[in-house]
Image (cartoon, rainbow over all chains, first blue to last red):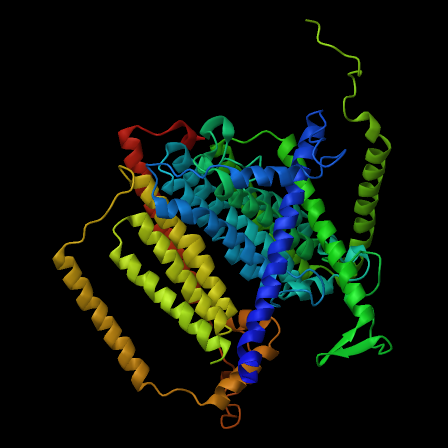
Length: 410
Length: 206
């Protein structure tokens, strides 16, 4: 009996706990992102966004939306292929959720510390597109079919420059293990791969563009394109199944942002400490306890919690940038989307890869080691100045130019 | 029964069931959906056995690439919605013979093969665990010297021949250039056909 408990129940129980923790994180951040999306869209369009549900800032708006979706009628069109129509949303969600299994949130805080974590994540996320194609095909509607086809063409094309851009920091790091890649970037912020050399700097922006396209976010949201295709691949969906597509979209937004943070932006390192927060305790045994045959150091746990908070904050910041871009830029045409990828992003990423390789081999060590310091200082200084400027002028942003007693002339 | 054999049997049975469904179903896109689960199940078996790289490659190449292109092709060429394929009895017979022959070959080679003893496998595994990066793989691929030279003890006369010079770079390049030629040819054929008909859509031109 104890054998059964030890060998069967324990791994299953651990797996269930980790998976439910990840699912709750994914669902919780989706709730937050949907509120953020509405609020940012409102501010950019010079209105307030949700203000009523849950107090002044409309915190509970997403919850109200969720309840609405739960009680909505679940319609399956008569012309649809019922099986494929039902399968689509689940495949899409499983694809983007499974990527989180290899995403480290801090040193040691990862469901599976895979050797090939980044490769695994890219591979698993590439299955998400299949759910969308099946949904588009299975709906039995022309709009959906067009949406699915566009999605297939776009995703297959954008996967290539995205993967090449991921290879560049991997080339510098010499490992595919995301935990190790992040540990290599501990210390001051000029150790981040973003500032490592001009090519990794370019690779970050190229990667982020491709990642936005691979999440089918505007300006690359041709798969849904309301103005042309009604709602694209999810035209025929309603209720809970529809919301699964959005869970998948927001989950993969955080996943690609997390990859960007780990590869380029120092992972969970705050950028001004000289050690890794996961090693806060070091070899100090004063505060370590033995729980269930595992040595637990309280200081390390505290450091890991702080690291997780920093990592999630960085990831959310990049998701915010995606939201910002969505409501700022107009949608491209489908041929422009393909042209951007095949004519610009693909050659650009190939050149960046070649350049990064040559830099590693040919640049003198002095330049390699010290150029990143002034570049990093300049970039961070510019970001701080812009943020300060935005903070001090924030009161003027919404409704500037329109006074509160403005009334239509009619 | 520990959890790993249990999971293996569950995943293996699901994979086999989906593979049968691929053969039995008549709608092409449904076949692709079943094939997705069969390939995903095979990747799951790889992950279960600790071969993460092979599993992830399986997902990336077959599910993310090939299968998407299959469905994409079906969508582009389909005349009506939900085309179905009827299989004649002769086709069933031929494919059953071919399938059974393949199964026979695989089963025979599995039964007659001599498997490596467990300590060799262990040594291989520890070697893999120690190699921490892909640099050695790349060096070996380009034909540079990697690791201890073969036959270094009994062949001291031919100094330079000790080195392992089995470069795979040239064959690899030849294959990739060949594939590129095939791709360009296919694109040329498709383009010529479209131009003759004169129905080139506006979006394709720019």
